Structures are given as C-alpha cells and as structure tokens.
Image (cartoon, rainbow, N blue to C red; front, side):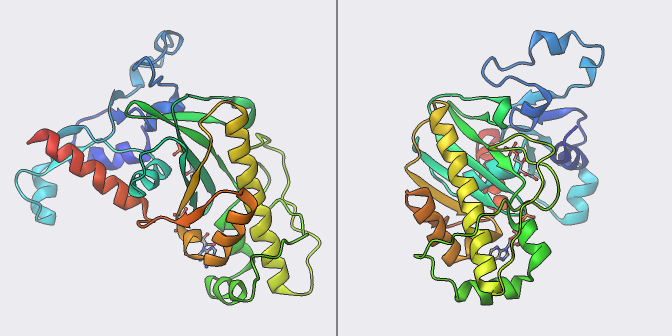
Length: 281
Ligand SMILES: Nc1ncnc2c1ncn2[C@@H]1O[C@H](COP(=O)(O)OP(=O)(O)O)[C@@H](O)[C@H]1O
Ligand SMILES: O=C(CO)[C@H](O)[C@H](O)COP(=O)(O)O
C-alpha cells in the first residue's frame, strides 16, 4: 500500500484500492492495464492493490470523518496520483514536448510524450497520463542539498547577488548523501561539493548551475531514448520561487524555462478530485 492509498483508505475505508500511477513502481503495467503475469503468479500477489485510473471515484467519505470535518453528505473520495505527476497536472500543460521540473527536496522531471520510454539503467520510466506518457526520472539532487548548506533566507539573499547570464565554472554533483537514481543510476555515487570558493555567492551559483546541468542531462537523455523533444519547461516546488535559478536553467537547458502558474502539487490533486466528482454526479 502506498502512502497516499493509506491516507485515502482512512477517508473511504475500502481496503486495497490504488491508481495506475502509484502502482507503477510495484510493477503495474499501465499500457496493458494490469499487473504482468509473472507478478500475478507470485505467492504475495494477493496483497497487490486493485487499480483504477487516477481521479476515479472510490466511494463516499466515511460518515465519522465527514461529521468530524464537516464535509457535505455527497462528498466522494477519488483515487490520487504521485507527487510530481500532481505537480505536472497543477501546471495544466497538455502538449507533447511540454515538461515540468519539480524542484523540491529532490529534482523530478516529467516530459509529456507520445512515446513511452523506460530504461532502468538510467532510472528512466514512463507514467501513463490518459492516452499519453509522462516520461522522466527523479534525481536525488535538489533543494535538500541546499538546505544542508544554507537557510532559505540566505538562499534569497545570495541568489540576489548572482548574475545568471555568466556561467559558473564550478563543477559539482550536489547530493544530500551517497546515491543517485537519475540520470545516472548509481547507489554508490558520492556527493561532490568541493572546492568551496571563499564567496558564498559564487558557491551557491556553482551549485545551482551544477543542478541545472544534471537537469539538462536528464532532458537530453529522454530525447536520446526516443521521447518527444522538450520545447518548454515549467517549474514547480520550492525552487520555482528562485528567478535567478530559473534564468540559469534556461541558459543551461537551451529551452524556455518559467515558473508554473500553480507550483503546488496539491493543486493538481484538487484538479483530479474535481474530475472524479464530475464523473460521480
Ligand atoms: N529561494 C530558494 N531558492 C532555491 N531553493 C529554495 C529556495 N527556497 C526554498 N528552496 C528549496 O525548496 C525546497 C522545498 O521545496 P518543496 O517543494 O516544499 O519541497 P518538498 O519536495 O520537500 O515538498 C527546500 O529543500 C529548499 O532548499
Ligand atoms: O524524489 C521523489 C520523492 O522523494 C520524487 O518525487 C519521486 O521519486 C518521483 O516519483 P514519480 O515519478 O513516481 O512521481
């Protein structure tokens, strides 16, 4: 059971219900809309959740929960999705070639593509989004590293001093601890955050630029593996509020990069719930 399935279960009380995004990583194949036969023949297969489309109505909210929070009597609970897909939905972009980078604690990229691409060597996989594919992967770089080195106030103050049009020559691989998933799958990769220059501004510039290079490598890899070509990148998560970083990323990625209008994944799940509510009435 995934975290979101457990939370939803507390609301609707029907055991073992999930969606085809959350179950991808336990082996559900969204293309054939079932678990593969090798998985179904395992002795533990009975524990696999039943799978519905994201945003499908599951059932009414439990009466005690409804009464506790004052929800209306016709309140329906719907299946969810994963956090970075929710961020993609929040950005409300629907064209192949459009991408959303979630710059939260980690860096997750999602590119809307006509072609499905999966390659475990590089941590690349495709989620289904209706009749299209969300191709991407998640790197362990991102905001968690920044939080180890700077406070959020320092991030704002130091970023203010950065000139994003000037490339930083500092070459790091910022990770919060050992291990990388994408665009290189290497559980033993060590963080590289040295040499540290005297200037904190130069150091932050080097780290932001190095994270942008990892992001660019990720999008280039998706293209090499046959996904639709990336045309524009929208940004969600805490990193989206850093305009200097957005400008650095635009230069390094070589495509337009901008902050999504809605940067919170919760907005995307609310859109899914709205879709489910419309289906159920
Ligand atoms: N001004 C900023 N510039 C870059 N990153 C920032 C800034 N402010 C906050 N962050 C980063 O945003 C991250 C939090 O974003 P959030 O989307 O809430 O993450 P989570 O993935 O944990 O939900 C923190 O790790 C922090 O380092
Ligand atoms: O790093 C993450 C959470 O820590 C990513 O958000 C997550 O791995 C991405 O998963 P998915 O592509 O299935 O939404």
